[in-house]
Image (cartoon, rainbow, N blue to C red; front, side, top):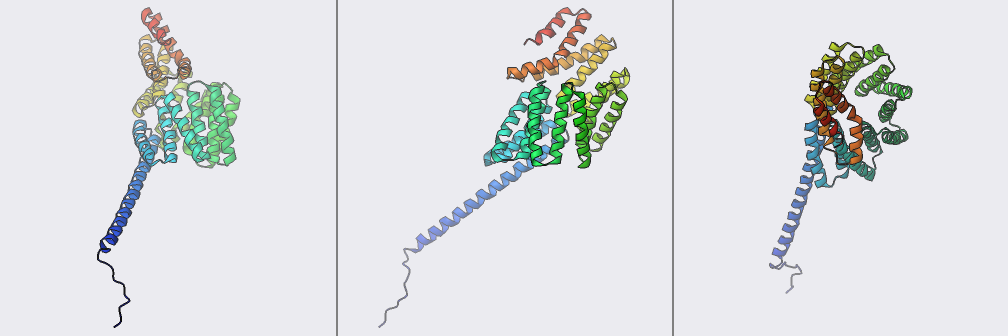
Length: 364
């Protein structure tokens, strides 16, 4: 009698094998779910980031802010450093548009640390330029130029013409604010040529406005008008509402310079409405100040007081958001002319106490 060599599996082993198989299957399902969850979170974060970009381009600043804040939470949950760095950079843009300059700088600096960590020279250059813009808005021109030069060096090394053009535009703005108009003009012309070569309509529109500023400063108002009108046409063509607002303000300034006050008022009022609609506090306070100064020149003190008071109110709101005393002093010095103009009109109208109260605000 031959014994069978076939081995039989003990019935007690079966449950163990089944359990192991079930355990492995469960782990695989859980891993798949985790992967699917991360993919879903990543997709949602990317979607929010893109929506914010589109909203910012449409000058819907507060909507962009909400979406980018949500995207930031999701990227942090995923430990996605590049996504986090991109969002911080975008948040800086929107805070700058909303006049929250210190928060803008803080976001740019956080973005810069992350972008350098992950190694993205193109985005690093953009952040350097945006930091320069923020410091320029605060009147810290030398600091701005330092950042602009760093950006220019970086984009030249990369060989990206579009980024090179933007860097030139930044540098032109700094030279203009320093009163170096010939250098600003030269740089803006280089920037304009690049924008036209690469079909960058928004960049072309912005640069036309900047060149208009140079020509107005050099007492060539008619040439400035031509450039501002071209800026306005392009901005409206591409639905760039921020650019449209800037062009309207520029035209208002040149018509006021030509003492065509009625035309200037119409343009300022159009810009004021648009600035308030899109949440552009910098544009709002600038236009309120310009309207107040215009009515002051026209010897309409009541209207001058109304608009200068509103301008000071917006500037006070912006000042209250600073905790960095150096940045606060820079911004205060830049806008102090509005306070003095309002105090002068109040004093001339016999409102001496109110005039003193306005000047006291600058000491706070």
